[in-house]
Structures are given as structure tokens and as C-alpha cells.
Amino acid sequence: MPLTIDLSGTVAVVTGGTRGVGAGIARALLAAGAEVVTCARRPPDRPVTAAGRTARFLPADLRDPDAATALLTRVRDDHGRLDTLVNNAGGTPFRLLGDGTPAAHARVVELNLLAPLTASLAAYEVMRHQPAGGSVVMVGSVSGTRPSPGSAAYGAAKAGLENLARSMAVEWAPLVRVNTLVLGMVRTELSHLHYGDAAGLAAVARTVPLGRLAEPADVGDACVFLASDRAAYVTGAALHLHGGGERPAFLDAATANRPADHPEK
Image 1 (cartoon, rainbow, N blue to C red):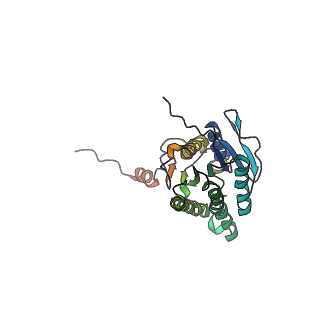
Image 2 (image 1 turned 120 degrees about the horizontal axis):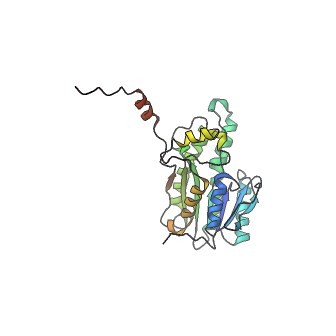
Image 3 (image 1 turned 45 degrees about the vertical axis):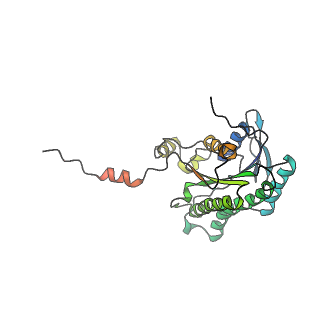
């Protein structure tokens, strides 16, 4: 008998849920039966749909604390509850530290760390008054677990986000659970900007032990689990969704330079 997760009757907000990973998360939550609200600074090119249902879109710039609070308060007022917040909005351009200004790096930290903090605080004010509490999911990155040249401020923000989630999980227990999805490389409509053409994508996929990049649906399935009662005892956790990680470069370097075995005498 297949395991199904039913989120019918629940309400979820997915920040940055209009494309890429965020849209994949929104579609998975819709398919599980949740009422889904997405937000971004600009509306999606097309509605986010799944299983014959459509996510509601509300415009918001989450870097503005007042806007974040207004968004989640409106969701509560319109839908009567808020069960899940997925802090997915984020990102960064490729920029070496020495090529960027302090202000530019600060904006990256603001979007990837401070905005999720603000949104989570607003969600907590709703969830803590609900008998069933709620679930907050941070969308982190392997960039926060290793050196991240070209996206150092982003990596630092994501490292801080994971630590923030652990602290929230302790402070907000038992009503509100807080977890982090630590993502590796995900194939989206913007993948070519990072990895190049089809040949580049295939070459990058070969560096992943599972042999492929993640799909947005993979991330969505993990979010559905963390939002559900199946994860009722999961909080303060970091779920690594990276296909096994990255093969250490020294292994290939050592293999390439290892002398041939001497024949037996």
C-alpha cells in the first residue's frame, strides 16, 4: 500500500514560489491537498497549478519587514490559519568578493538570511496561537556547508540560516517545528545561467553520486514531508537533498597521477 500524505485543510505560504524550486514546492503542496499562497515581487508568467488546483499569488518584497508581516497577517485573515511557511525566496549573482561592494554583499545577506528571519517571526505570531501550531521550512544550500567562491555572502547567509533554524526550533517548541532543507544543485529553467548548455549540464550531473541534478519536484516532496504529521517529531533538523554530495576533487586528482602498478615478479 503506497504511503500518501494528505495536507487537505491546511494552508501553506511559499516565498519565491512562482518559478524554479519555489514553483516545484508549491505544486507538491497543492498535489498533497494544501491551500497554497505564493509570493514574490512580480507575478508569475503563468499560474502555478497542480492536480487541477491553482496557487494564489500575493505580491510582496520580503526584504521589507512590514511587507512580510502584512503578507502573513493577510493570509491568516483570508484563510483563517497558517500551517506551513516555506522560506524559499533567495539567490545571488556570481560575484567574487573583491568585485562587489559592501552594499551589494549586504543585499545578498538581507535577502537570504534577514528576510527569512522576518517572515518566520511573522509566521510564528500566527502559528503560536493555533492549537496545532505549525511548521517552518528553511530552504538552505550546500553553499553554506563548504567554501563558496563567487557566492561567499550567499554561502555565509545560508550557513546562518541553518543555525537560525536550529535556534528557532528550540525556542518555539513544542508548537512550531523548524527545519532546513540543504539543497545541492537543482535543475530549473535558469540552470543554463550557472551550468551552460546541455553538455555542461550533463557534465555537472556526472559529478553527483546519484548521476543527476535534483528536480524541483524532489524538493517539493521533501517539503510536503516536513509540513506533514509524518514529521511530527522532526524539528531542528537539516535534511541534505544533494544526491550524495560532490565527489571530492582530490580523488580524481590522485587517480590521474597515480603510477601504474608494478607487475609481479
